Image (cartoon, rainbow, N blue to C red):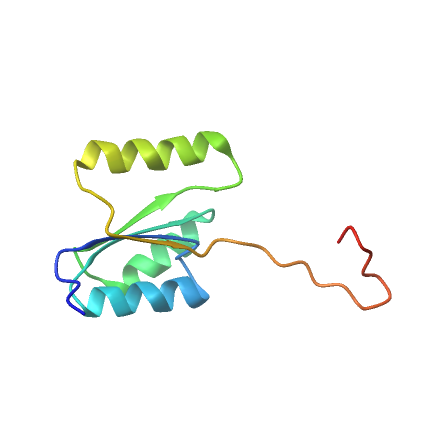
Length: 103
C-alpha cells in the first residue's frame, strides 16, 4: 500500500508498539504525528526517527483539554487524517489474588 504523503496520527506513539508503528509509516514516506504524555519520551522518539515528516505533540488522551488541543492542531494544519492509530493506554498489573472484578 502506498502511504506517501498520507497523514497518520498515532496516540501513545513515543515508545513501544506506537513508536515501532511510527517507524514503519515513516519508512513508507507518510507524515506522522505521534502523541504521548511524556515530553522526554517524545523528544527521544524524535531523535530516534530523525525525519522531517515526524512530528510530536505532548497530549494525554485521558484529558479532554489535551484531546481538544490535538483536534485543534490537526484542524489548523488543514490536512485530513488518512490513518488514525489509537494506541495509547496503560495496563495495570495485578496478581491473580489481587485482581477484582472491578480491575
